Length: 297
Picture 1 (cartoon, rainbow, N blue to C red):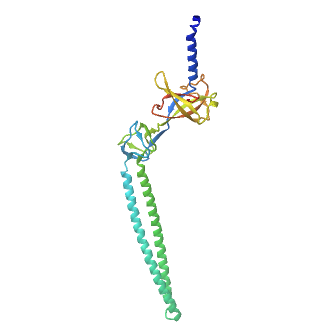
Picture 2 (cartoon, rainbow, N blue to C red):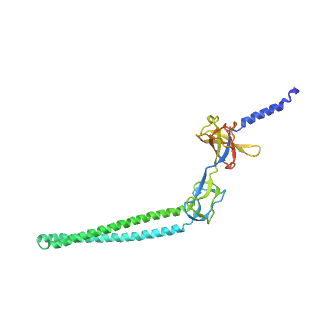
Picture 3 (tube, rainbow, N blue to C red):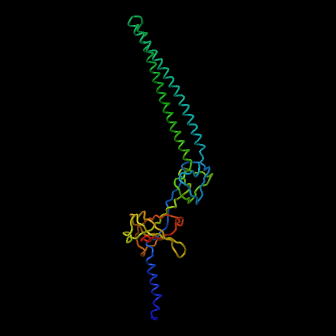
């Protein structure tokens, strides 16, 4: 019996080898998150910016403000212009009302002269003079109405300009679009910014994605919505395992990236895939990870 004792280490080594093969990862990759770059929507000096790298910002909070002095002055000027134009238009409205009343009075005189003319108590010239007065009043009313319409258009245009300036002033507020962690800060208070210039970048790290590359041979084994085992380094010798869900599989093959290893020896073409993982803070952007297609039990 003792002559077989030398086989025990070999058996244990074989068992460990089988265990290692069983736990060998099917694909490797790195963790990433959906990153959003918040940019300036206005030109000017940044008055204040309450953003620091690593800070968690809620959605909808005002993270900073760009100087609005110039826009406020332009808006005040546009409001004053609109009010002055409105006042002029109101005066024209009053003039139209006066001319309309004059027209009514002349029409009364015309009716009286026409009656007297039938009785021979008035002349044709009197009637012609009244008709001339009516024609003059109508032309005056028409001219005043044209001026009123033009001024009314100016009032409307000034209103649009005020709305535009109000929107521009609102855009001077740097509003955080989504809840997330600030990854990079690109600007500081008192710096000059321009439209579209990045201010900071953030990402929601509560959900993180592991991008891996699957060989063509493995492709039939995975599908969208499938639960897989995601592993990442806990320390030098052990891994942490969590569950993840395949959220995206590329429809196009690509050459294997140099930094990626696969289960088999390197192949020419692979398919990128993303695994969505709920992050408790242990996983970081850029951290290496791996998956086992068989999910955790």
